[in-house]
Length: 359
Ligand SMILES: Cc1ncc(COP(=O)(O)O)c(C=O)c1O
Image 1 (cartoon, rainbow, N blue to C red):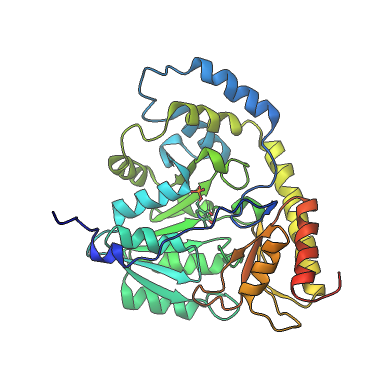
Image 2: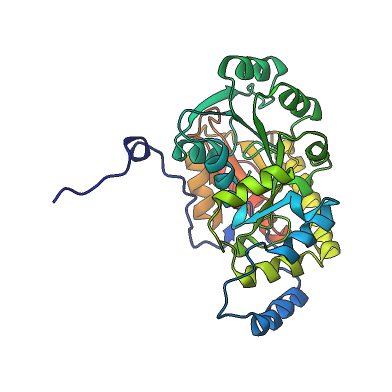
């Protein structure tokens, strides 16, 4: 019997995995280091008792979508919810990309944009950021004019560089896009500008958000898109029926009642981010301005060891960061998620040791 193999383009794909290593200080996947409010845990425990477990969940996830809509001052008809923003992105691509269509990204950026696009069967065209990870208007225009992509991705703040996309760049993309513009704002609350207002002004703009980072809820797997009612309807045609379970719907809705606690966690992380960036600067380690909860850095070792060695030394010291050095355009780079003050001190101490600098 011959075993059926996946499509040739899928066999050839890189696997996207961040190692889940059991280590004391995990600073590799941009999660929140801080727990959710205990009151939220109580809310969810109470909700478990009231779920009609024998019934399919509310397919429209109405109360959750209303709560998200209230937070952003839009209508629930402008909100699409799914299992993490990854499922939101995948559904967008299943709906608007696919065979015979082109998706544009500006590299380096979140790898799953191109990955999901390829899985949908679309062709991926990559524009390039400069050596400092800034995107030039001329590059935007070149990609849009030559490729005429049906779907264009921007990520702001951009993972893994941390840079916030300037408003001007987003406006140039939106004004010249032949198709849909997806702005991935997984880290928006850590910065001071969002492209959300563009959704109401332009029917070809979608903004995606997640509960995984600012809301300390990576385990919940909940994300959403804010878009025109037409786009939300079209996404609902493609996504699986009853994809969002009943408990998740309540858990997400209740989380949105703790906005102040979320904002104070975010403020603490931003403060710590700036402290780490200052220290890296004092150590003479190259970094780029971050509007997110992580920092990309290029460790230059006194003993001129490579980034993998620094990564391994950090791991030996009990600190796991993301090794981005083999990704295109990121030679020598590692990425650290902002942790608790204690974790950040452990990271900085381990880094000094790894690159042969005094603490
Ligand atoms: C830019 C970006 N978009 C989307 C995601 C996926 O988030 P979620 O946990 O909501 O699927 C991530 C996760 O790291 C991310 O960095």
